[in-house]
Image 1 (cartoon, one colour):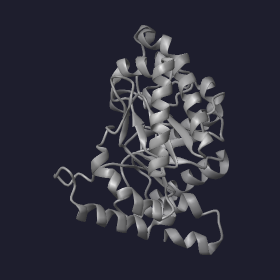
Image 2: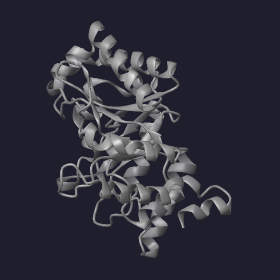
Image 3: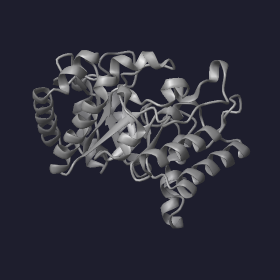
Image 4: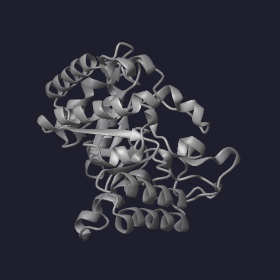
Length: 315
């Protein structure tokens, strides 16, 4: 699944020609992707469901039907645009009821396949920095479970994004490279909104995407991690939240470079995630690929364990 925002053409909104070219590119590689996650909804300052997320609904929503027609899942992100004030209101009984009713109605209207919640209210390494969120953790989880139930009643899904430290502490990286995923001090124990990974494991959410793996690419030779960060964090977090729920988040590095050794590292890392750990889901929050090498890597992850004819979709 890939994050979907405007293309950065310098124009607001992007012209139709830009979107038509993007959709044509996705169509060519539709077998190398399973869904898109447009950044078009939010929880506003009053705790209401909003058509304003990290991106603008009116600029993106018109281009979703042709992507849906390709057989791709449409799973918009719901971002906490309204800050802690919006959080405090949406978890009240009245706020929860109104928000979920509006969100589900929109999902039915637009034929969405689900939603992805991105609420990154957080503290830092100092435990005291999380105090303002401690009272929200349990009701926020209750809100998400109630929301998930309502989506399931319409045969739709609800996923959530978290850092995914789940108790793992980065002791390897310092300076500009660390800590990976912010995983140190209290941030290693608390997830967003002061929730914990056992809460997600026990939740009724469909998917939990860990974003701590943003911290490095697979084969960046200048970092202290290389592929080991992805392996370590995916292994750790998938056990903490449950393998059936876990998906890794990534920003870069998932392409098959021309250099033979780097390509081997990329393939070996993907093989490890998929075949050794059993990870079957990932989410990319930098729009669709811009190179054939990226598309190739995504196809490899999805199809390289299949028969030869299926593998050829990534070549």
